[in-house]
Length: 369
Image 1 (cartoon, rainbow, N blue to C red):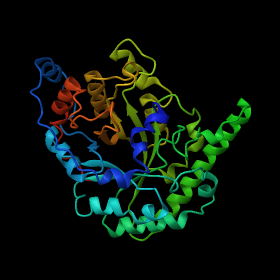
Image 2 (cartoon, rainbow, N blue to C red):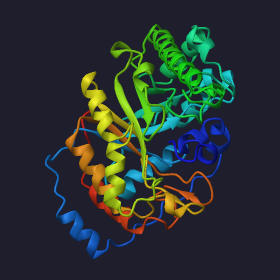
Image 3 (tube, helix red, strand yellow):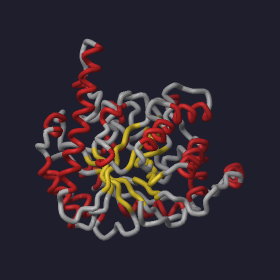
């Protein structure tokens, strides 16, 4: 996610190098749901869906804990059928072995399609040209072999996620691409986008060469006003299975009301309308590996805060479009910045109630997708 990249590093992005540390933290108990207010109950009663069985998989990222992921489904009243997680990447050894992911998910993935965010390289720094050369292909083969051996060979791999921003080393507008001359900077970024696509093709090709693999690949941007020419970074239809978008309820423009904020969510550069158009042109289903409410105590006017309208509209969007899966980001990255519905932050009283009532009627969906 894109907002306040230096402080947040994209919510999920902030977890990239810290995966092994955060994973060891004790999981907090999921609090009991509050009684739904009459206003929320009335809202849900008038918001009937058009299909009895939704087509999409629905799940969560609840903080490096399968137990909390599953408990989230219990809390909302419908089991999760999808889950987002993050590959540890502090070192190549961590990425190749996938020890944390395997330890967490071995034997616990039945009925749950796992979406794993995978960086284009391990550690810090900018190594786009090296990745684009195929130099790391052997390392990704080792990663794939380990996941397959652990029974995770049907996972979705979200390579180089949120690449249209600046907060990851593989970001098209990463600070290494800054230049005093605007024209030169634009050219560097265009070349970098092409290199990103080349690196993606190398990695996908390497992973697909491993016997027993059934992975799918999610080309995922961050919703917002980031790098405009994302099509330059598209590796081609043969290398992509889903067009993803990480969507958070920020209010960067300090719009007056929830309706204006939702309109911006739909119409912004890589917003929901763009995703539908781009995915339609390439005949790919949509995905939302990260989506959530936002409450930022340091910048309250720049976040949506307790916004049931956002929850209701996201539900309707999922229901009326070709969505493969969506995972709510039920996690609070650090003190003062919150997205969690079950973390006890107390920030989303009404939106939390509405989410629970809407998602409680989701039955188990098909295994495919």
